[in-house]
Image (cartoon, rainbow, N blue to C red):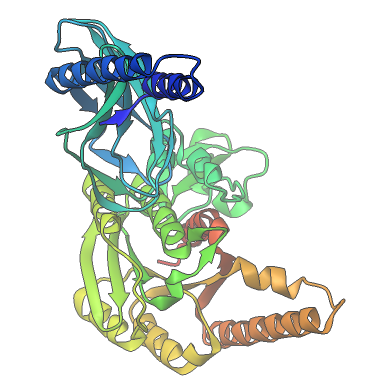
Length: 435
């Protein structure tokens, strides 16, 4: 309980009466009587405030939230007493989350329910708890504020940002791919699996013309192809210290999980299966490829409690694990941050995988490196920083070049561009029939 502004004003007035009594403007008895009356009124109001019932509160919130997306929380309050209550409400949401609409001042009428909504943005993945709700109730004469914590526990799980996937639900694969930033070239009649015969269209390649069907029908007929389905894609995610980097406050690993969701969604829409191998040090988590909704749930569930750790990743151990567990040929998408000291170990691991699988090495590049490399040379410090960044990027490029000379596909990309570039490369591989 703490005094409110009206009580402090009354105490200030009593102090003024004391000053006047000290100057013999007012009798001392007036100061004493004023103080006694004020104390009696404050005590009575405090006693009534402690006996007043707390409002009843119910919190309404989705049990699962996407990372970084706007979410609304509704609080419903009901006055349990016979008198009107003035309250100030602050929900005990997880710390560090951005919140709008709190605290909220309300006036509750007896036997009536009042609801309001505030907005929050989850800042991290995992399971989080709402410890309760703090309600500050004003006393009847508004001389005191009584703070109470209502026992309204609640749990929420924060998953990687799946909100863009929900927005893609009604779109074609092509439009869905473009919505995540993939730049696609439309090609008619290409693919690796025969679908149907159709009339020849201007622009069709002559090698797509079915001459036997043309003779039978008396008009030019072309073969229509589609990308093969029932293939397998394995996301091999580096969960080591390289993924702890951030660009503008967003962790690389969260960007990787978002891109993995986008790729998994497109691949599952194409009829492929999606699996996952997460590697941290010598520890791995294996999820066998699945199709349909089960595959999407698997990737989402894995991203819920998967975090980058401050340890070095053992690429050879991870490759050996994948070779043991994944017998069927698959597109293995290794997402890491390639550095020159990884050259020998990474190349050996990728060579092991490429004996059976088609491997795509995706190397994330820090935005800070690009900014440093583009910096000026106005001062000695800036010149040294720019030269160091350029040298570092050249060393990374050399590792990528050695992988490409050995027949390994690579993708050097900023984390913010990963979703679009990854989907773009996957669809190009499908169209080329490389699996």
